[in-house]
Length: 311
Picture 1 (cartoon, rainbow, N blue to C red):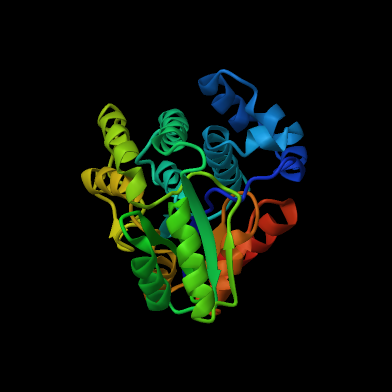
Picture 2 (picture 1 turned 120 degrees about the vertical axis):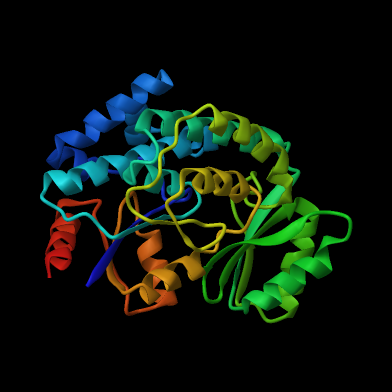
């Protein structure tokens, strides 16, 4: 039996996240304290007490979710957990995977994701960009709808999260046109998401150029554990390829369905979702029910994952 750890991205945050974990495991607050020292403010306090409007700012959300994932990753080994054979992270979660693979230092990762959030937030003025979730259509239908809606603006399919679940992003008006076209094609739901940053589309190319400069100033090593990267849905360990794909990830689709399918093809049958929430476990059920995913955010969840990994 082969195993994997998967790390969630933005959207998994909530005020009070990891409270039960912190009550059980000292390493949680210790890890948040490390992050707070890098950031210059009390990240744990903000995660526990909000306000949610501040936690949901991408410049805060990204360090918060990275820290949550690494705190749980550390607790996994304190509890005697086995090293997984593979790692993967959804969008932002790819940075958590690289820290787990010892390709990237935790403090450097905190600085990078804070900068990533800043660059994404400033790349497109508020109101100019938008994202929407499209449910119930084939991938090709969504791609076609975006091509039809684009005109001289940007709109594209950016998150292939599971069969029948695709997120689109781009200029606000173009996204609205694509929503209408998807509804005409029979989408079960086509709804705007409450985010202003149009991630993983061509509008992020300027941010990617700035991120590339920052990545060149950070030390990367080869991944000790293979990482399935979003851009290619391929296993990568080479440091230069890991960095190049992080840059491209900002303006390229997240191929999550392909990534999870690859893990199953590699023989993975059990995975641990290492972070806040259960978003990735839910997607896994839609992608391939043979892949059993445990969330380790709580002591009960961690115990279940430990037992499954031992079998």
